[in-house]
Length: 252
View 1: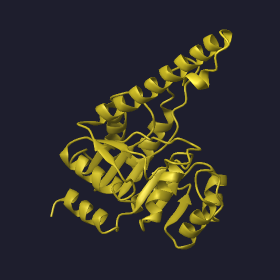
View 2: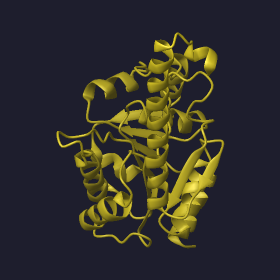
View 3: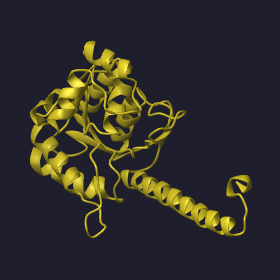
View 4: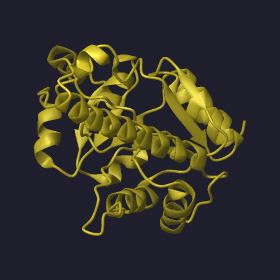
């Protein structure tokens, strides 16, 4: 049985341990989505305060139910650590770190680079890796892949597999949470795509596969741009309507 087939079997049997790197407003709800389905999740976080909170069942994300988090921790489905060395316990690693803009208004890639280096130094052979952080097209192939390969001495497509699946969190939304928000997945190659669909299918109701990580990365850019343009347009029309004594909400 091939390495990817072995991993696929583990995923299907809920025997694969999922590591989530970054336990913020994206990572923790995603970790909870897997944990609630009976999959063991290990969260990786630089903040000792957040790690202590998770391990004691204390919630700090408003979109998560306190009792559900506490139950998952008590039942051993979810735990957190600051030690990157424990990544070797995981069959899948999902990167959910921030990409804030720097003073040049460009995305700060240091968090993704750091997470990739940690993965390369600590993962075991046969690991599936997915990037969810908002970034520019080609990041998975041109940033994550070379770092992981360099640090691990392994080869993508043979020893590990890569995917990009953009986060789609809408904080405060009462109707759409992590589980029922449609999610795009773009694996780097056929095996990576198969593993991505199998893994995310455990936690997310509707998946949309695309041809490559760069296509999935462009999806996120388009979604954010489309949203920004619409918000900006409505704001301008609201100002215009107000000056004409028109209620923009009636118009909408």
